[in-house]
Every structure is written in C-alpha cells, then in structure tokens.
Image 1 (cartoon, one colour):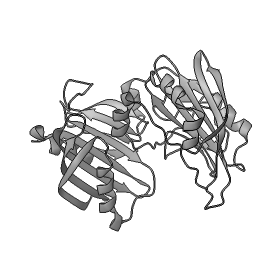
Image 2: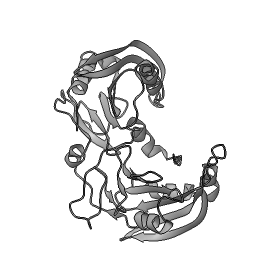
Image 3: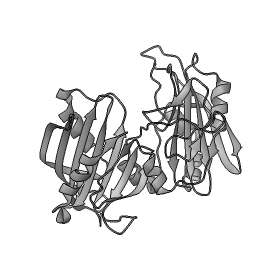
Image 4: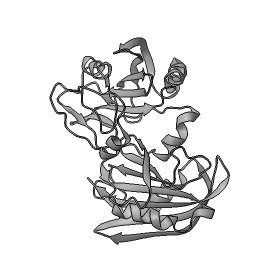
Length: 327
C-alpha cells in the first residue's frame, strides 16, 4: 500500500539548491559489519535498520522489502534547524495531514533533536488504515537532518520504528570526491565542467568556471540526477519531458526551440532545447534538458546557460550527458 509523503515548506536559503536537484532517489551499498550504522550513499546520517528493511533505490533512506514502512533523510544547512522547529507547529503539520500526538526534545550524541510522533489518516476514498509517523529534526553545527519514518500497522512495530529513527548516527562531512564517488552513476567525460555540490545522494550540480558559488548565472550550470521509478511509456515521453521542464520553479516564459526523441547506444532518449527567463535575475537563458530512459528509471540532465554565452556550451552539455554510465 502506498504511503503518502509529508510536504515541507523550507526557507529561502535552501530552496534554489533543492530546486536544482529536486529529483531525490538513490541506490545503496551494504554495511561493512552488521553492527555498523548504514549510511545512504553520500549521506552523513546513518541508521541500524531491522533485517526486513534495506537501502532504497528510490530515495535517500530505507524501505521495508515487503512494503509498508519507509525512512527517508534529507540534509539541509545548519541554520535550517530553528526554522523547521519553529515552523512545525501542530496546526501547520495538521494542515499537511500529520496529526501530532507527542513532541519531545531528545539528544543525538552531543547534538539536539526534536521528535514528533503521530499519525497520518488513511485515504477515506480507499478505506486505508492510518499511517504511524515519526519526524525527527536533528541540528548540528554543520548540518541539519530531517528524518521522516512511517509505517502501516501491520508492517513494523512502533518500538522498532522509534528505535530506528532515534538511533541515528551523524558522521563527519564527506569530501566532495567521496560524495561524487557515491553517486549511482559515473561521469567519464566532464568536458571542462566540474562538480561543486552533490544533492540527495543521487544528483550532482556541475559548473564551468572558477566560482563554486554561482550568482546571476555568471557561469553555466548542469545538474545530473538518476531516478529509479517506472519510466513513462514511449507515447508518453514527450509529454513527460515537457512537464518536467515546465515544473522548474526558477524559470519562466519557456519557448521551445526543439524537442525530439531518439535512440542511441541501446537507449531511448528525449532532448529539449528552450529559451526561458531566470526568475531571480530576469536574465534570458537557454535550457537544455536531456532524459535517458532505462528499464527501471531514467537519468535527467538539465543545463542552464545565459543566452549570450550559449555558443559552444550546449555541445559541452551534450558531451557530458553522453558519457554518463549508470552503475
């Protein structure tokens, strides 16, 4: 049975980064010893899941093999902790379908945490049961963790899920190289681009130029993300690709120059090149979106460059995307 996700409203400092990499889903790796915490690839937050839960290939976290229970983790900037705690009022959470029964301050090692326990009512149209839910916000000097666990009544026990959530371990920050190595794909040809940030364990933000913090689109940016979910059928791909492009909340006034489906290297692809306007800066940009469809998911690449810098850059975007190898 499908468990609905909690919607979250985050502050301005993290919105743009999350919008660039808002395609959460990751592949996993096994722990070295049974007693060791298991970390989703690239994540700083580790857990000791019960035997019937394993790393998810759909998101950063864990899911029960037989279904009915999940745990997901999102990493946010350190200043997000007070923002989330102050914003997670009973009324705000209830408006998103989560009825809080208990909230409690807890310690995660030397760090502070706030745990919310309650339930999310089942869908009245489907006569489904209520879903038990645990939300933990962990604040450290260098990172904030948002952990959401949920379980159907016949899946995991409340004691098991609470232990899973509160048993979180926070490890030191990974280097960018370690985070890139943990991605579910390799990039053999970077075509002069370099990674500057990994998001959600399945997405990487790349740029061409000397700056890591990019303002006013001074440099071209390219985001690659691997999604593991049922891909659209062949007759739905063009609509799917256009909807994915238009869903970008940082751009407006799209004008598509070309959109095409093609097959190469044994895979089906879809490519869109469009002009648009960057909303924060009102600068005209060119957007290149390429999606490679696989039997169990798809790889999506979105490149953005100022219109006055487009010469040669679109070919570089394509060079990077063509080289990507899914692990």
